[in-house]
Length: 222
Image 1: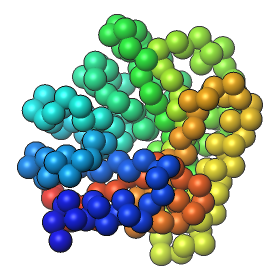
Image 2: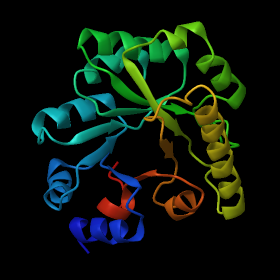
Image 3: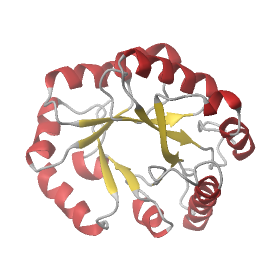
Image 4: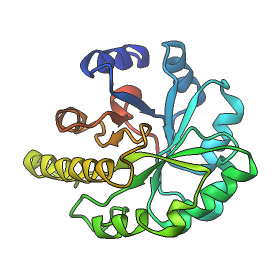
């Protein structure tokens, strides 16, 4: 099957309220355009330089998602155009995003990354650090970032029950924030988890934003 067929097969599987970010990292422009021509607009990249270069070459109405770990010194390259930053995991990084967004008279949508996996290699804020951050005075003063929700990546394991538990933890944290810090903010509505190998489990556990690459574009090119 081609990219358009793969894309449509996945869209038939996922509910209408779930946003699908097609992970186009390492993929050439032609592959992205195949998905674009099939009507898709949300694409995710994990390297700043790749995302910035593709944004210059490809159609203006693509919604670009930065899904990789973002270094604070690279924010300025994405701040004029990025649709959403997925991996925000510190107050310092959020402050830089806020400052860069203000320079471009923008409000940038962000997801706070929570560490839900048991693997030490995964990025993200532990729950207690996250709660401390959103309760801080500095966080409350940021006017050029809009926190849309939380995201997390499960442990890389065959144990589907463990993956479910980690997704449930993320949902509990999302609901706790929704009931407290973000209780009057309608836009705080994104619970993002699930990738090619576990997106069906993630959706069952409440995810409404999934990131899928290899099932659409085939194996990654290194």
